Image (cartoon, rainbow, N blue to C red; front, side, top):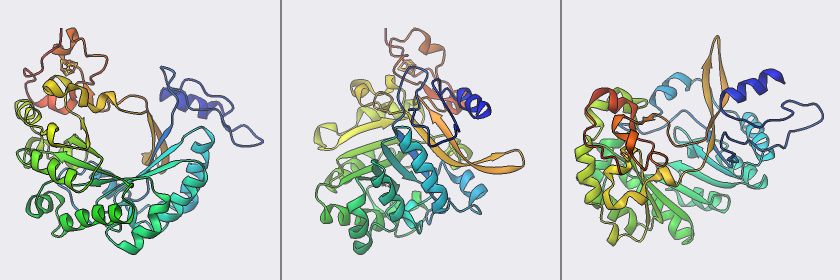
Length: 339
Ligand code: SF4
């Protein structure tokens, strides 16, 4: 018990009681350093994916852990533990989670434990009406990956011909089966699709997405290895944010991984202000072994840093700054502290 408690304190989980206490499951909520209650679980259900996205943040983990399937027994244990601690929302991620043979069972168990359910997907299985019809009664939301407004651009970035048709078909299928379904879109922003962003947003909106997240290339996995080639420079981001067609969109828009000072009049769209603490459960390497481990994130600042310009910025408490890798590689003069 002492060892488990110490391990969690190292991760910033400040109020913990009775870890591993005999006589049943502990039901004390996970409480963060500023008193936040952990409500969201992100579960990596698989390390396999049919696509090869240019900026895949999971590429390293997928090659390292693809020989370690996530069994349903392990999933059930994770869900029960976190449900008993007050976690009320499950987001399933991967790889491509819909291809996991127990994907539906995972959703059913999460619902039974009182959780809302969502999945991050490129539509591999949800494009199939029969599969979607079976799954949707247990799925509240899906975050579909759409990286361009045309098959040519999206397929180039996803690394597989047919990917665009697949994901757009999946969104249409889910929306036609359930017009109230929470169809969301995530579009990863890189130098290759920057100019096409307004049209990507218009397409996602026309497909019925109620939430669109624009995610700046994250320096992780292939996104790290190819950061020089992929990462939009700050002046390019500033221009792209100024061209957002917000007046045309019915969908709610959120911008992830972009410093707030580059968002201009759209600063309030920053995902830094619309972010929930989350515990991520995934395979991790430990000395001599691989473990399915919990990682507690209490703020959205992962891989972001404040630089000199941020010191006097009145938004420093809200904005998480610029990618650490960006600040290592390139000038950050375009950042403008807000008085
Ligand atoms: S100056 Fe720094 S803290 Fe302020 S908005 Fe820009 S990146 Fe964020």
